[in-house]
Amino acid sequence: MESKLSELRLDAKELKTVLESVSRPKVKDLLTLDLRKLETDIIQIEDALKSSQSSSSSSGPKSVGIVPNSLSVKAYDVQIKNYSWEDAEETVKIYIMNLKDVTSLSKPGDILCEFTKNSVHLRINNLGGKNHVFTLKETSELIDPEKSSYKLKSDMVILTLAKAGSTESGRS
Image (cartoon, rainbow, N blue to C red):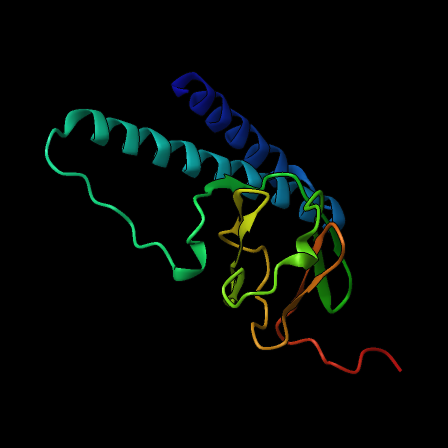
């Protein structure tokens, strides 16, 4: 896992170098998004390494996280890493697919979505025995949490991120 971490760091470093030489805005946006994904992967691997090192070195009692009431059924967390997105003038839509029967979830707390001015966190609890988690730790532009939303389709969730400073009415 440490070799994968070093490879990801090298990839991120090279991507930053390429990003500095790019002048086209669309290409910059694409490269910035890929860089953010790499940085997210690096952080996740670092966290996993830290937790595995601390759990193997500590012989005392282990802390247990608080489980929400909606998770009475045993399920494990799965990070969502495959998604697609669409960038429009006023919004960015993120399509999280392959979530069979996501519309069947109806209890409060089954789907938790939190928008901040520069991040998104989606948690789908107990779908097919798994808790699906999507986190975008830092967006490339500021978003408006109040205007942002999510929609459920039969096998996908669509996150709509409203760009900060954009108007609701659109073009005339």
